[in-house]
Image (cartoon, rainbow, N blue to C red; front, side, top):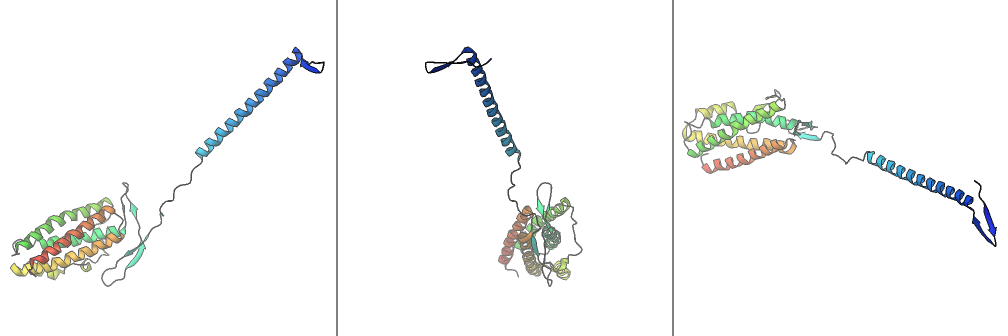
Length: 243
């Protein structure tokens, strides 16, 4: 239908046929505008979804590189620097070579302390010496089993042929232990206090190594407890005045 416009006396108006045509054009314009708005909305939604799916930058994490660790050498040998060689168990517990070495050596170290303490009954004259010896056996014998279990859980051997146990801090010679076993009365008391004091101080030195470089938090707590407990026993032995 054609558009018919009538002009009369300076005015114009649209005939019904022209009005129908204008309405059609208006509807087409509105439809086009609606389609444009709909397209813009779809683009905005797609853009937002893309932003949501885009991976965000990960937070900075600690370096996974091994940390250089100073490993004290045996008496007369220099210290060495090695990687921490940290290992993590399925439960998240971490440990390293310093932890393993400490546990292996403390099994031997504690075993000698228990061996000496078990000599006290029937030989010691001082009740204080008997009491301290009994506490040492009661505390360190179970700790040895804890250390063994710690190694088993991590698939580590109980001993290391490379360790020279005789040179561990505080370790007493076999001759000295034999002499202690042969002593009685005041002589036993004096030897026991002197030897066990040196033995405890050696254990404190060994715990300081694992506290500085170990990775197992629970083991460090146990080592700290050992150092504190043996410090108390050193003071108690000094108070006996038998040396």
